[in-house]
Image (cartoon, rainbow over all chains, first blue to last red; front, top):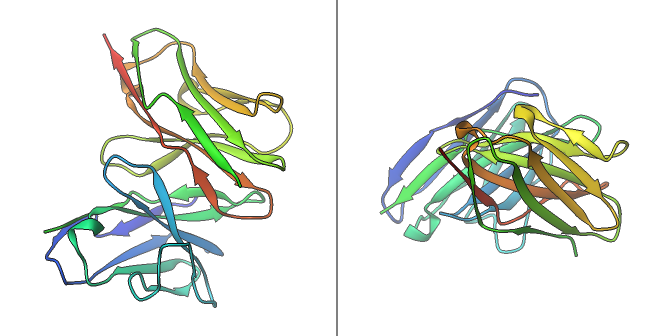
Length: 114
Length: 113
């Protein structure tokens, strides 16, 4: 499976600011995904990011709040904009691989907003 | 609509005892099913998956799961729990040509001496 890294691993931010999270994969992949895991909760898909096209957002998530870039087949960024304490979560990227597009996850970015 | 139900948000077992984590899904078409494990302060690691073929699938760390279509279940088992198995376990379903993973709420497994 692909090796996935995320930067930063954790951050503490002030409300009203923005944070950009990077996801790097060691091989080329078509599909990348961004998830949010709120404290004590399961994972919720934010958006699917395919190279060369606009990200597809799930219900409840909008591009103005969570802009995503996918400049090539090994890299993506998620920005959390105009943050509030409710944005405090773990943000994870994943990639789909193989004939069944099995998803493999990065280590996550733990975000705390004060 | 597809959904996943994990029965029991917390499960506690003794070291050496059987681990059974329950997962039921709802899908109108044959699903792909997955179990992931999340250790504290880490991302998700794939334990095992069922896509087609043999309904009993074996994964890492001695875990296995059986797909039972008649019961719409994909329960995760391990014959003998180890202290290192303490973690959060997530069941997930993916429908055929769609790439979206639907996750269950998760089950936190505690293993005590």
